[in-house]
Length: 357
Image (cartoon, rainbow, N blue to C red; front, top):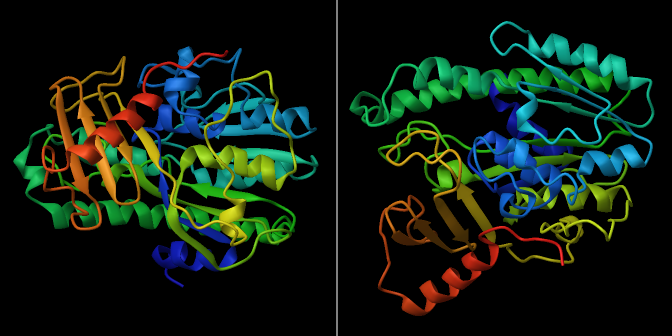
């Protein structure tokens, strides 16, 4: 089986969340949101340089829940800033340019396999490496050489994804050989998407909040409890992952910490719910036409059909009908005042810091 097809093949192994909307189209804020089950406007990490602002006194992460319930928790990541460190027994840092991640991560699986139960977070960073080396370092933010070559950009990105498929196939097959598959919950996700040149000014990610960087996917594989070959087509959020894991593992949430904004997806998996979930999205561009790496300057509120975007740097709104206009090319602002007002109000409810009490 070609390794590029492995992502399709993996759908047969468990539950596939086909439309998962991430909180932020860059790793730091996205991963903090996933681990905490809440948006950066609540957990404190809402910018590229915001990892130190994580509200660790009032947010209890999925790792902390697992640690408290007897799990040995270990991670291997590109940098310690990408995830909340609370609850981990050990966090390793790999060299994205030199390390063979498939080999290293197999060794880490061996190291924790005898610890029962365990939580192992493995960060595959080679797509990031390829984008930095072959896109960011070679093209400018408005370089027509990049934005006019969509097919070339797609082929380049497909090459990165093919490598990711090869890595993932190796890790999953190794886990099966080690006898871990049947009784292990695998959560496989991508934290954000990537531009192929759709919008001038964003050559990779983190600049805007269009669907090509914020609509992602995830797999939940756990043969002991979850069905196989189950596709969930409705929209969910990356903040739904943490409460879903607590639900699967029958771990109760603590009342003295900030509430998770995410909701378990088990009712969707069991066929007891079929509703799309609205999502709030923010970004704090590191580059592009209006960089703002210390605070978010573009936010969006997305339903299954509509998306309202607000750019505070330009004081500009955009409204898109995602069913009729999936490429977000026709701005409908001014044509649907009732819908604009409704989405604006919902956006404001999620925007800004939210404190206990």
